[in-house]
Length: 234
Ligand code: HPA
Image 1 (tube, rainbow, N blue to C red):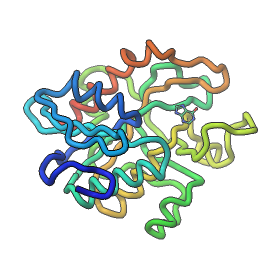
Image 2: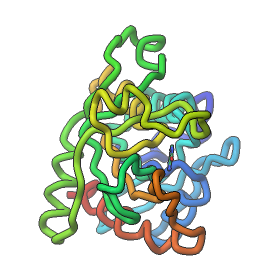
Image 3: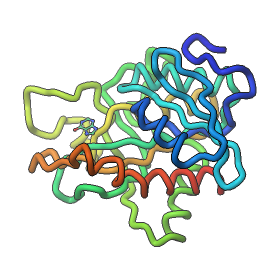
């Protein structure tokens, strides 16, 4: 048990997939894992451990934003011996260069967040993915002929803003998309010398206000889920 996760020692696999939404973790655990069992539900944040293609894997939610994923990923890495976390989430596209349902394998995450500095005195405002999972995702995608976009993204601390222009930091690093968690996950993995990747599906295009509808969401995320699972067991 850690402060925020109630799984017993040994109930969390060394490789973890991490959606933001607890109900998505439940959906993935029940639909894609064999012999899945619910190993933690503290605060309604579900963690399921089972097997995929014969390998043990845990799917657990991060909640929203850097503080939340910062807590769960730190406890997984430091108290459960987790070696690799792949965040699987959605993002908004800053430009029409990305389209709805596009997949983005995040090369690095920039943020105005003070998370990395406050936690570890890491002063960088952009942190790369950590370890080998990013490359494994690219390799599996190539072998399945899945088109992947790669590059830097913006991990924003805010979802709602007064201005509609692209934030200065995202412009500085030429970020095509925005989400809210990768920066803290990468900071934790960098500090703890672990592996971390982030794979995103474009769920909304900010300039045109197009977005994936609620009922399209479940089906459309399947490609990302299977890609992350196959890379995790590669
Ligand atoms: N902003 C931040 N995070 C997001 C967005 C967005 O527009 N879409 C999906 N995750």
